[in-house]
Amino acid sequence: MSKLAAKDKFLDLSDYGRPIAKLFANQLKNTQFTPIHVTLLFGVCGLIGIYCILQDHYFLAGFFIILKSIIDAADGELARLKKTPSYVGRYLDSVFDIILNLLFLLTICYVSKTSLWMTIIAFFCIQLQGTLYNYYYVILRHHSVGGDQTSKVFEDQSPIALPGETQKWVTIWFGIYTVVYGLFDKIIHLMDSQAYKTKNFPNWFMTFVSLYGLGFQLLLIAVLLPLGYIEIIVPFFIFYSLLIFVLIGIRKVFIK
Image (cartoon, rainbow, N blue to C red; front, top):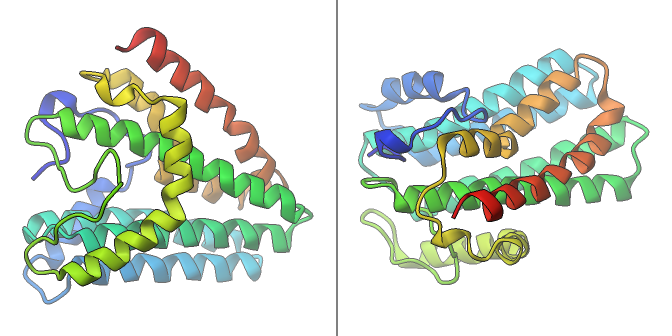
């Protein structure tokens, strides 16, 4: 199953690792490796990237951060190849992402002159940015004929477990997901509460929105680190949040 129908596909600037992720997933298709194993692997890559930042190996850190993004796309690809969609896998993936985002920024704060308060604000901003991207993307997927329906526009109740997973673990991971993402979801929904009624998002708009995709956010960090701009990473992502108002304004005025 593709995430989107052919007519709804757009240039996703945050999804640059998809071709390699597909190749990787194809290599694992007939093995015992599961999508959750791949999720754990991208978590390990993220931790290695953090270790590299602590050791001032910024080129290596950038490499492992980008590798983390590529493998992050591979777990979903493997789930589609094996025809084993999983709510547990989706929530685990998202929880790992937010934990790694926080650790990346705290590590950058630790090795730079950035204040802790600015780092916390930057983390909040990064999550709002990513939530806006996911919000519009999930809406598009639900309006796309044959699109992936695993993610929900409004995550307000635990879904029914899919074949191969237990309801208990779906409920547990749903609870964890809502704790760590609930506030960000509520803020974005409040800022553009009518977006789900939009019949379709133009491809150009979704490409614009993909500047806030996690893959693109991490790519920016991976580039800024070896260039010696570690001190501006935190303030940059705070300033970068101004684009939220631009995107929502475009949606409300031009896309009904």
